[in-house]
Length: 266
Image (cartoon, rainbow, N blue to C red; front, side, top):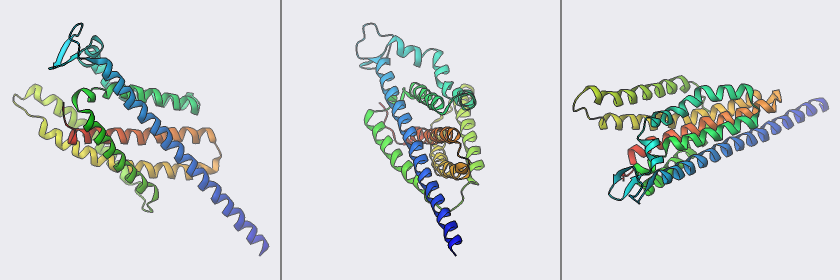
């Protein structure tokens, strides 16, 4: 009996240790993601501020009655460089993070994530030219509330939602294909109005990334529980950053699609 009590006590202590480790791991995931999100929006706001001016002297182009593009703004929004800026985050995801995970320490991967967050801020900075500041703030708040609820559900639910993964990833590729098609069709079909298809893409985008938020949260939790026994702190550190990246992308994409649906244009 004494031996059984000893085993049960040891098992309980091990379970408590894993629970404490999981809480620390998730805190790191959410903390890293939050810092990355803050970097993105501060960078976007600062870059947009450098891109426009109300002083017509020295401005390159006029975009509204009292707003003009600076030379910097023209370079990133109107010159061919805009395509590089638009697709740079995607290239960074596919090529940069794979190499970082293999070659860099956990601290190095975290730095790479913050560089990516800054690059994403540059890529989406035009939202401050297209939408009002008030609507951006309102949509950010709505996204934050929805994200928190979905992520909490993904963390606490007993239901196994791992089967959602392949379906949701297929949905993301479908969104990319539909967006590209909607961009190209006006070049070939005279009078084509992309607004209706854009609305449908935005609505589907919100639903897909809402599902991915819950799915990725459960996946992060499951990965930790599977790997906690290994004691490889370096791997777990990198896993936390990659988890933060997944949730960060879910948040940013859900925000952008909601902004297209709910945002008030300048």
